[in-house]
Image (cartoon, rainbow, N blue to C red; front, side, top):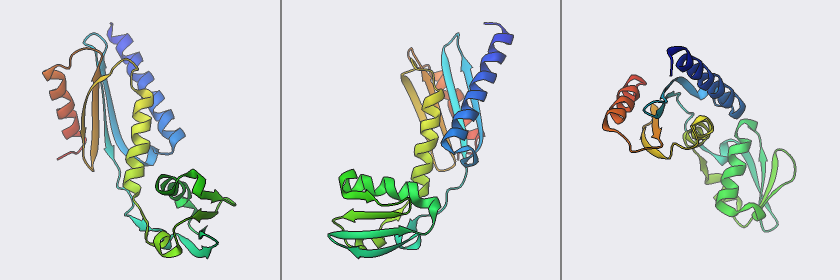
Amino acid sequence: MSEHDESFADQNFDTIFRQVMQELGVSRMVEDYRIKADPDAPYFIISLRLGKARSSVKVSDMALIDQASGGSKITIIDENWAPALLTKLWQLYGRDAVEQLTRFELIVTGPGPEIISNLELDPGEELRTKVLDAVWRVFPEGFKVRYNLANDKAMTIIGTEHDMQEEWMKLAEELHKEMGAS
């Protein structure tokens, strides 16, 4: 592959990844990223420096919780948390137990207000999930052999469709350090 072709491919990966991050609303959560691909090897590396997520928050700090027949009524007062709260409630109690009356009003069958009030949402977990979703959307489909590095500051994933080479893993580790991982 010529240098021109590689440059064109790199620009396309960059453009696609930026669009995917924007669609998923995670552009501000990723401070920096690098994509390296060598189609002749072949490998694909993506490394991201993650922004600081907000600290955990209790449901009682983002919503009003009242007793409801057979459970709890939740009125969300901080709309930024609405999607994360709904997802958390579905995970814990199932979709059948969570009724969405309006955009910001929910009825949860089962747990009482005290239990719901003390639930905590971890935005860092949500951040990692959304960022990983963006990564998988741009990652070449056939590259199933993977090596992952992750901590609170950075995430690096290298993939190939062949056996993973030690030198590629070292490249990924170097890139991971460049992204601020300790």
